[in-house]
Amino acid sequence: MNDRYLDYRVNVGYTINMIRFYKPTLKRKDMDGVLQTMVNEEIGPGESSKLFTQMFAERVKCAKGLSFRTYPDCIDGALKVLGVDRTSTVAISPLAPSVYAQALRKTGCKVVFVDVDKENGLVDEQGVLNSGAQVLILYDSCGSLALKYNKETTFAEKVSYGEIKILEDVSESIGGFYSDEYVPGDWGDVVISSFEENNVVSCAGGAAFAVKKDYVPALRAFIKGKKEEASEEISEASEAEAGAQAVDASEGEASDVAAEEVEAPVVFAGNYTKMTDLNASLGAVQLQNLDSNCDRSRKICQRYTQRLMQTRHKAFGLTLVDFNSSCSCFAVFLDSKPEDSIKFAARNGIPLIRTFKDSICSVYEGDLFADFPNSAAYYFRTVSFPVYPFLKDTEIDLVAKVIAHLL
Image (cartoon, rainbow, N blue to C red; front, side):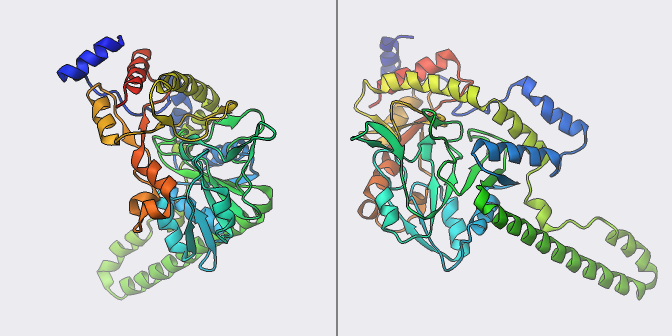
């Protein structure tokens, strides 16, 4: 397919079927571990979940971890391990997912929104230092890492946020690295990742966080607290059961039926927060294949980047020479209205999404441009193109050509 044909198709309004924006990186042979889990009749929380959690912890250079069935539950747990409460001040970028705003609201803490740095697209270093926060939520948007270019040494170096506690979210950056020096997880005291269907690592749902050595006691205290909550729920359930039996005994013939009902297993809330072995077995396969999958995605992004350089638009995030992104997405900061590019791409069968449509910016009630000019610009004018290992060469060529012809 040549560029002239692309122009002709756009001019006459010709349309084709949309390619998928995302596909999970699972092959048929990868399902063996999942099937074995089912054969072993161990689909609930168990050994596979523990194994996957430890694999994740080691990947992000942490000591211990804990996995959850949902991302919000995982965030709540991570904040508790860091000691966030109503007396805390927490700094966060407006480009972080809005689920964090909900989680922070529940803690009652003071939240300080800090604009992002233009170089790496992540929360600004000086802004954090000036915020007075004790805790920073560092979300690695679009796979970017908190690095900066030192003009004197001509090398990249870590952004330093001072003595602040850091919760680093690597949902979009896991699998990336800079040279042989820095990887996702290097910044966080606690490191968290979501494993939803469209994440770099997918368990088809769930999340996990891991802690550095100094926070292992806090993690153990959190787990102990969870077990105590569960014990209280079981105790309350037992009291309710005893009360039901007493009532049944006074009701004569109805007591036999009631006795059968109360003998059913008691399920308490703690069971619903742990990642299941079925999900964890999927995640283990994803972690094992992470490097090869990211390599494939990087090669695709290289082809996209070459075509993007022909336009007036720019790639979002870190663009240092030795930086190897996870390529969780290919985000483009447009020098035009995103609506025009989205329509143009759709007419050629390419789905585009607003990269930060679900960020805190989407629920912020103040004046975005006045308060956070950098974040506001990225929020309104950044779009993402499909990039995943299972894209066909013909699809990659089409996406690259559409990038080159962005309006």
